[in-house]
Length: 467
Image (cartoon, rainbow, N blue to C red; front, side, top):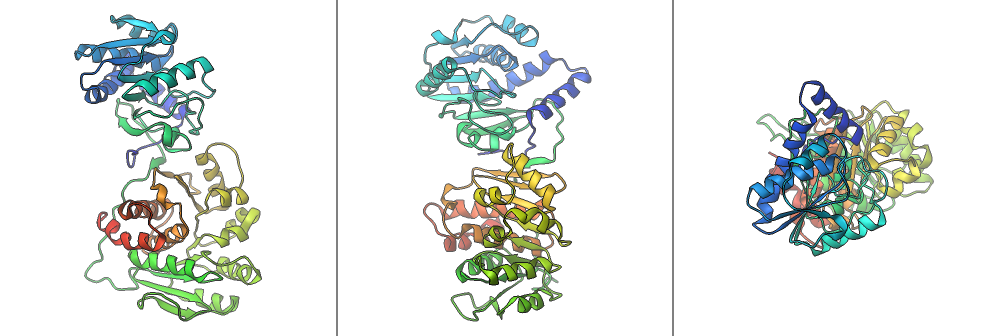
């Protein structure tokens, strides 16, 4: 569970936000007291009277831990602090001085039912020492409930890479803002549930977690064209395009047309079919004035005919979603081919497709932003941590979607949902974030072991929750 619509800050950006608070006269001690009090409020709720072990590092995260321990002890709980070393001079040392309860060494700490992790927080970039990692893992395994302060110790703040953090953290309370590690990579499985505590730091960010969108109900003057005409292009595997077309229909599009060589095949009667035999036919089809969005790529194929279809699609002056085979055909030339388009484009690569097209280093957010800037496209970098980035530098991250989405055809469904959102007037990251939320919500409603057709059936209920 990730707080919806929450700002996301890197370690450097969080430090800058804190420095701005200090410049306005708020001391580091005051900020540490706020953080510790916020953590303690959550810890008391989950401790339910059980004995608590608080792990305190030598830095500011350890300073927060001493404040937490003091508040928990004042609440009547049996609290023991296990310190990994002497606190550093400054606020951490002063918080340590205010702690009057029992303290032991980390290496001599007993297992207790409730564990608070305050060893390392934001900014860790190297693996935990083996001895610390071993003790920490053992204490987590023995605890009945574990809470991490800001981030679990042993997670890279900006990438979510695992640096020694054990599995089994139940709850992480983020301080001031989410960090990339809360929503990326191994952080998804190592942070447990994530709560966000407001500790009085004003935060500005173009990066946010995906929130439930607010969608409009059709008005009394609405008609099929005002609600968006989505054109889906059929190819070598027509079932994939039909999935995308049906998803667009179930996502609120007023009119969906499926263009391809077949005029029959299983499809809803409300789906309009258009025969397209070659690239010239496709160019004529896409020249239609009423088309609001095009979905090209699901099941397109990778032969010469598919290449010709892709060229015709790229030449069309229409908002376009490129998915599946279209992305494989673009390959390493994706950035230049997409940058040459004047009409807006959204691409929906999974990890393998993204790597072939763009490569790159750094966190998933960094790589997706670089791809968006180079291509001019809005990039929906799919996965358990779906990162959506626009060429303007805005980012939305949807983390923790149903793992049952890892089945054939669900990506085609997402392309169709996105086409419908674009067809209704969406621009930039907004329709992509809405599509990602609807797709994930439909998966939750579908339960376990669903297949793509069943996912489509849940889209209207997901949309109803957004009206």
